[in-house]
Amino acid sequence: MSRLAQHLLLVLLGGVTLRVSLSEAYLAYVQAGFRPLLVAAGAVVLAVGLLGLVRDRPGRDAGPGQAHEHGGPRVAWLLLAPVAVLLVVAPGPLGAFTAQRQTAPVSAPPPGDVPLGIGPDDPGESWRTMTLAGYSVRTQQSDTAPLRDRRIRLVGFLSPRDGGGWYVTRIRIACCAADALAVRVVLEGPDADELLAGRSADDWVEVVGTYAPSREHPTLGYPEPVLDPDAVATVPAPVDGYED
Amino acid sequence: MSGPPDLGLRPSRGSGLDRGRGGGTRSTDVLVVALLAVVAARFLLPGAFDAPALRAWATVFVAVCLQALPFLVLGVGLSAAIGTLVPPSFFARALPRRPALAVPVAGAAGLVLPGCECASVPVAGSLVRRGVTPAAALAFLLSAPAVNPVVLVATAVAFPGDPEMVLARFLASMAVAVTMGWLWSAFGRGEWLRMPARSVHEAGGHRAAAFLGAVQHDLVHAGGYLVVGGLTAATLNVVVPREWLDAVAAEPVLAVLVLAALAVVLAICSEADAFVAAGLTSFSLTARLVFLVVGPAVDVKLIALQAGTFGSRFAVRFAPVTLVVAIAAGSLVGWWLL
Image 1 (cartoon, helix red, strand yellow):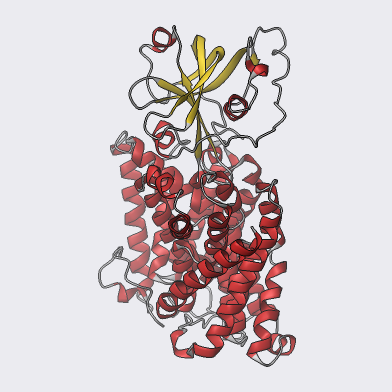
Image 2 (tube, rainbow over the protein chains, first blue to last red):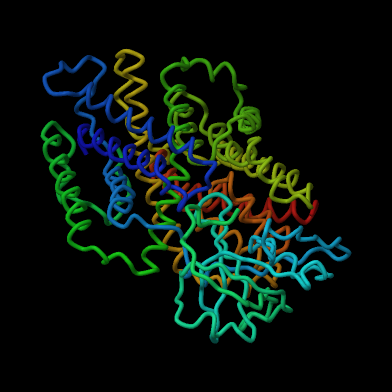
């Protein structure tokens, strides 16, 4: 690979990285706090490519320190792959496909735990909004009294449950989308089928409902948190689809 | 110069022409054609990339590349700074002359580089180029991503209920680094190391020009191998069913081996792997320690980066031995401390 092609590749890679990190698109791939590092890295890569183009511009004398005969490695061509994937596919946040593959049981609190409360209702509402992880952990406590007789609101996308029915789902990422883990709450109760009719996987919804005892995972047998829904509404996908 | 391993992805046949003066036009032409194809695909095939599996694969692939890029840039910058600003005699004076002593000193030096493995590979490469004995450079290569302060703090945050995990990780990773350094000084052969030729800043130009040349060279080189790792990790992430993993967590020995294998194929940054390990709640603490010790020492992305920096003859020997040593160190320390 010639030096000119290397410069152009770095300009492309840096430019695409800057574009992704200066818009909201980067939130599909990494944590929000990672943005400054991405912007800095994109800017450096872009600058290295541009400086290279300026130094090697046609008609400029090759100085004694410049080894034009030295070509770059063939593997460098692969740098085109992330650029092409970002420009052509522009993949969004992970969704129901990943949720079905990347799940883990909710970690059970240690024996003798002090039950966590859930706090007061949202201002002016008759429910409490919770994260899926926060709700799931509380359903596994030795004492679920804080959840009883409360209406709880969860926001997430729908993913199908083995053997029928739906989960409301969020993906959690620790660092980047490669370590994604899904948090899922079974939507089950007298009104669930009616409320969820006609919806499909990856639809974003807000669900208001009440606590119900956990159910066994259809094949693996570990307990899955359940919410008995009394209202389901379509909501737009949030800017940052991952749950902290 | 040893060619990189044939990856089966060679855009232009007969790309021997890429080197030499005529290469300028040729590889630039290929680049332009490839970009035109990208633009054409963007507009002519909308909806061709909507399959959920493909989109999930693309998201993970891009995520691995973006996550690693800042650390790669940092490592490449440090490496170029060492290569152009630090006189070659410095390390020879700073490190003990005898490799047996230089190895632990270099391993301890890994405590201060806050980068992940993508950063430490080019830095170790430049250390060897500066005349540091390879055994010491390899000890540094293994310890820097595993025991630096950022990683240890991340581990403490990820395991709030198990503070001994931090100590166990530190001891096991340091043991791997020092053992591998000593093994190399006892059995390693210089001919296994094939450092890519770097004529640019040997030629005695201005320092700034030499620095820029080194950064550019390492960026396209290590960056290309990083993409190999990203492609591998994304493909395995989308292909291997997670249920397989849950089924083996119950078997102690199998769990250790499976988490070691998982660390190799997932190729997670060492600053993030503690959070992933914390999520693998069905596995024992020892198995998760092995995951944390193996990950920064040997994974698909690292093997690719090492093959690019030190040559593939080195990588095929170094990676398997490191894997065995890391599994042994993680299991022993876990059995002792956890």
